Image (cartoon, rainbow, N blue to C red):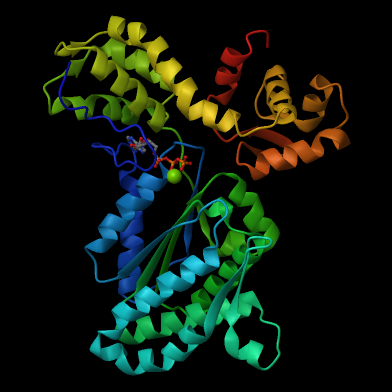
Length: 389
Ligand SMILES: Nc1ncnc2c1ncn2[C@@H]1O[C@H](COP(=O)(O)OP(=O)(O)OP(=O)(O)O)[C@@H](O)[C@H]1O
Ligand SMILES: [Mg+2]
């Protein structure tokens, strides 16, 4: 039994070796430095499957930004939370930080009125939030979220410009943003981008956000830089396996690394989980191919009980049937017509199930009328659950 486990299976847990993301982090750092020099860059959105490393990438960039003369705020959107409320709170915090800078004092004074009149109210009946500028309400004008958020962000950006201190937003789990919030955010960033205000924006979310952004505003493709975060290439995946053990003078046989890469397909979460299992179950200085083979069933059992099962259990019986039918299609992504065929139903009947599964973040529209799982290797899990597939 070893004392310390250098592997980090979990959600957003920074690995001891952040493999394969050097270029992305470096590019982000250059982007932020360009904004500091007065050349603001387009907002960036990372998208990718569950467990591929979006959160740790955002955190790694934020860490770089912490060493630069910028003001950062991190927002993680909850499934039923209000992004507007969060960004309003974050903006207030940023304003407070700006207010101590001499160059911004006057501008902050003016801006305070925008902030104090930006209200967010919660309606417990339908769990909805409304937000906007309260002065509009005072004049009986119905608030327009896009206009109000734009005013807030642009005012903040102008103050940041005067203070010579760019502001950076890091927003995780963007797929949980409501359409009206997304529209408001896109408008606000579009305007601040046109005005070349020193606002840096990094977001991350599941692949479905690509489509939603396009639907909400067709110009999103030109405004945002969408960057896919994928599973690790062979060299990087090997590094993620080998490097953490090096500090403990533990190495891997070549064949052991190969087997880990085969099993995990280079998905960071799977690498961390499998290596952690092997680490805990072995004690020699060289991890062999045999060690990997022996521990694979334990790793899969753990994974099934946690990572996969929590997602599977969130689905109704009918939704689970839909997922099984996707596996029966034999190839992923698959078409909804093919799924309907394996469910003995027609497309119209199963479309609402498809919609709720997308909503729950279990599947996503992969393009050309096709769908796929947002969780890597979910099909293998379903085959283990239902062996007659
Ligand atoms: N580049 C990497 N190298 C090594 N390990 C990594 C890397 N990126 C992420 N990990 C590990 O993978 C796991 C998942 O990372 P993370 O939570 O950032 O994924 P995610 O894409 O945000 O997932 P989700 O969509 O569920 O939020 C963590 O255990 C983390 O330590
Ligand atoms: Mg995440």
